Amino acid sequence: MTDYDKYDALIFDLDGTLVDSMPAHYQAWQQTAAEYGFEVDEAWYHTRGGSPAWLTAQSLIETFSLSVEPQVLADRKNQIFSELAEMEVVVLPAAEVAKTYAGRKPMAIGTGTLTDIADKLLKKAGLLELFDVVVGADQVDAHKPSPDTFLKCAELLSVESHQCLVFEDAPFGIQAAKAAGMDVIDVTDAKRV
Image 1 (cartoon, helix red, strand yellow):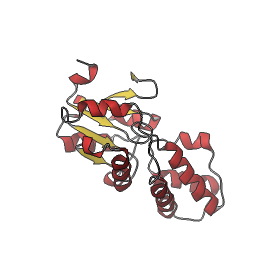
Image 2 (cartoon, rainbow, N blue to C red):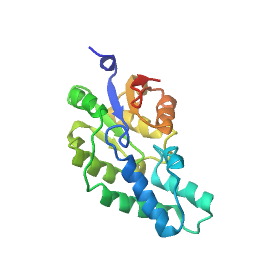
Image 3 (cartoon, one colour):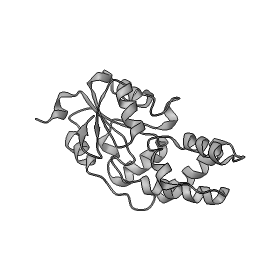
Image 4 (cartoon, one colour):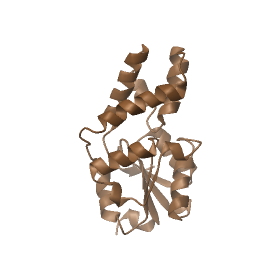
């Protein structure tokens, strides 16, 4: 028996937790930025982990005084990322936990990525069939660090939020899990926070 057995459901972030897609997300932002005449600093970008593209776009527009709508910028980034996601997907160690508990516990994905792109990444990684629910950025109004993504996962799994364990890699996601009243494992150092 592991510590995970005491929970009624497991919820996983996607990017940086189950698959190493963060470099592709950053590359997509770099290409988008080049098209719109600005640059994205990698250190700054990593502070945005777990945030949906339109919120990152909004921040970039404010930072660089761009005259483009956030959704237009986000849509372009998502289009580029979707093309990049067709390439090889690297599966991360947290996926082993999901494989171990598939069919034994209700499991969900709670991600800042759009649902259709998340589904595509999970399918490419051979992980989609492990999960009962995928909640993407397009399914909630308030995004990480708000708890809404994880609360929707719990609701769709029919599990009380305090009975869920979240696996996350990003500060926004960790904050969101805590705000949802859930325990959380920071997969970057594999400890509960």
